[in-house]
Image 1 (cartoon, rainbow, N blue to C red):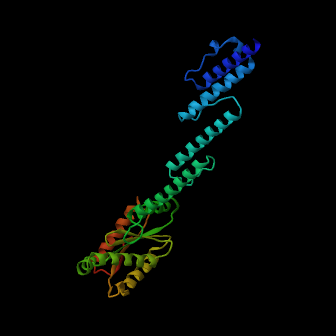
Image 2: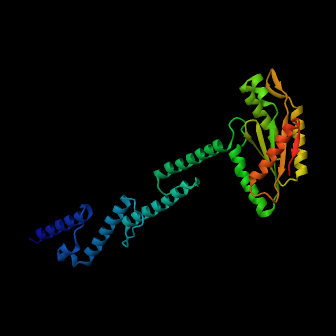
Image 3: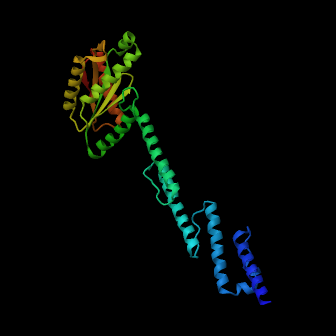
Length: 295
């Protein structure tokens, strides 16, 4: 009879534990027979199972701040998973802010997929930056890029007094090139002249296509006289250069330029550009193929 009673109690215990683990509703401790609740080992087991239920449920819902006091092999693994997911959440937030250097090495097979994703995101981000900041025709920086640079350069000028100059350059009679040879040749001319101008400035200077047949250069830490001499040399070099378009076609042309240097009365970087643009207009109006300075 004792063996039968022991087996019955075993079955009851297994049934109770199964209910705690698998049923949606947790049995109330007060409704569990006193033969169980009076046993400290059962209470310890009950509390561990309750913690297992709670942490597994919260993990399944993506809630990662649930804290449990119980310890043990299974609970330790779940806590480690919880901590890893919290860290992964932080890393995901960093990626959303543009930090694509985030990598995972604590989630097995998932890590490889996550790391591949961040690598591709970094590549796509660089591609988009290039598309946003570079002119596809000339492969020079574009107006968006140069104006962002000018904001930083102007801030340095206002804060630390670091001088800078702006040079605007424009291809003379460019419409004639398009009308005579076609727009495809005109595009090649733009690309070649742009690269020629870029290579003529210092590596510390920034040259960009500003729009149409107009280019802009930003020169930090250079006096107006030095900028004028450099720009005059570029205008002269362009005049003497045969721009080879095809094996049977080379073109000679000229450019006009306008220069302005930042001064204490400037309230924003656009004022420097506006003066350089006015100087360029004067060069055009006075015969082209020349440099004008407006301080």
